[in-house]
Each structure stands twice: as C-alpha cells, then as structure tokens.
Amino acid sequence: MAYVTTNHPKLTLEGAEAVIFAAKEHAARVGVPMNIAVVDDGGHLLAFARMDGAKLSSIDIALNKAVAAAIRRQATGPARSGDEINALVSLGLAIGSHARQTPIRGGIPLEANGECVGAIGVSAGTEEQDVEVARAGVAAFGK
Image (cartoon, rainbow, N blue to C red; front, side, top):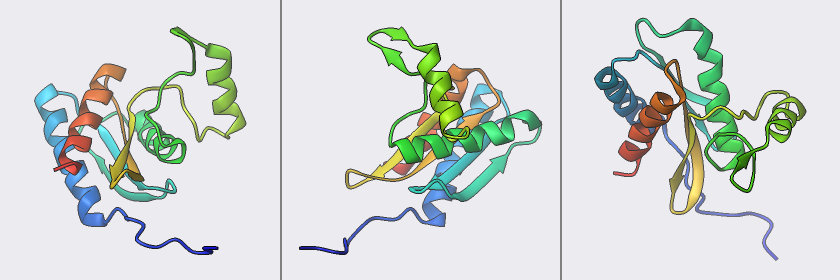
C-alpha cells in the first residue's frame, strides 16, 4: 500500500512567467490590456500581470478564473445540461463554492505529463478574447 506519491510535476515560477509572457504578447496583438493570473495546482497564486490600462474590476475575476480552472481541473465556463447552458447549476456552483468556481470563460488548466500543475486566468476583454489570450499562454507552456 502506498501512502505517498512521488514524481508529481510542479509548476515553477519560470514556467508561470513564460505563460504570462506569451499571454501578454497575445493580448497586445489583440489590442486589449488584460489581467493575467497563473496559479499552482491548488489554486495558489504564482504570478500575476496587470497590463497598463487593464480594467481594475477584472483583477479578481482573472484570479478567480485561474483558481476555478486549477481546482476543477477543467476550463471555466457555464454548467451545461446537454447542449444547453444550465444557469441555475452555474450559479449554484459559484455560490456553493464561495465564488471559487465561475461560469465565466477564460480560465484554462496547465498540464504536464497528463497532470494538472496549475492554471491561467485572463480577464478584461470579451469572453472570446479572454479565452484566446489564455490559450496563447497555455500554448507557450506546452512548448
């Protein structure tokens, strides 16, 4: 019987900064200053960037998206019943988790060796822009 796991990959500060750098570059290309958060697998902040001109109201949203993606091990977004968005469940998850889960898209897990090692959360643009910038950060991590 094993009481301890070994060889669990961990996200480093260098890795988090590479994700932030790529996301910032993409946000600049899109023309929307963003708030970008990178957390470890437990949802603890590793790196954060607030681009000049990014909405101050989006700081907490970016962090919340990153935390939600890390602890749920999946991209943020609304709960669904088949193809339909289930607003009641989406709201219930957010309330029941003390806002540690969100139906707002823009948070994506970071994986290494098939394991979640953290997540990125992006906020300040439209949901589509946030997802696009987050994906750019994830793509840099995969290299």
